[in-house]
Image (cartoon, rainbow, N blue to C red):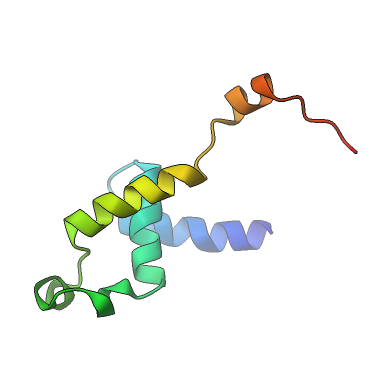
Length: 81
């Protein structure tokens, strides 16, 4: 599991540099990992960069994968079953 996390975190940091925004990093990493550039308009495809409108929409989707663990732990009691 740890190896898989590192394998995902490194490319996210690379495509997101110098920004520190994790949502944006996730969106860009998924864009490049799944080769979504192949399905864009020719202008963005030739530049090999995500369409900013598409990337903004992906940011909205990616927000669902970030949790505030402190708030979650305060709201829900986690017990071992």
